[in-house]
Length: 168
Image 1 (tube, rainbow, N blue to C red):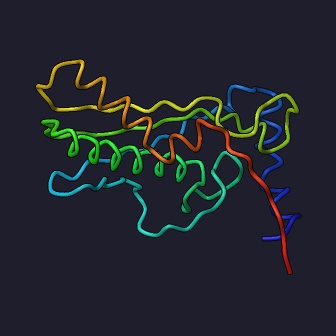
Image 2 (cartoon, rainbow, N blue to C red):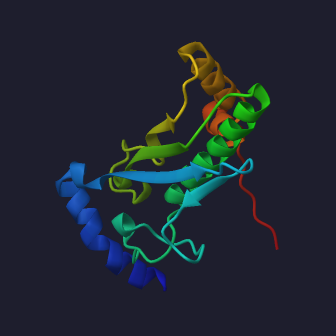
């Protein structure tokens, strides 16, 4: 695809977002299940191949993975594995468990439709559903330690220094 084709594909989306900002705000989600036999999290992507492309809200076909979805899926995977590892270390009695992440994006930002619209997630919510009889103080400790040691969560939370470079 060349720039002309991309611009032609995105033009109607940009116009729609200029006319109605609410249409540009999309919530992405990811979900995973903790493995009951090992320290692992099975992330549900709903796609057979990990091919990244544009989100439909920016003109993509919807056949490729969106990097925003992949970010949430990475958070789900990391938080799920971390929670399982922490639960194992604490001898926390945990039955079935799921982890979900969802985040709100305003696609006007990434398409350059509105200068004031942020590029990236406005908010990300991480939620665990735990099958356990453990007391609330142990659940609170499990979540606190999971938050502390989840690499993806802490990376997003700490706003690390980022750089971009190109080489030949």
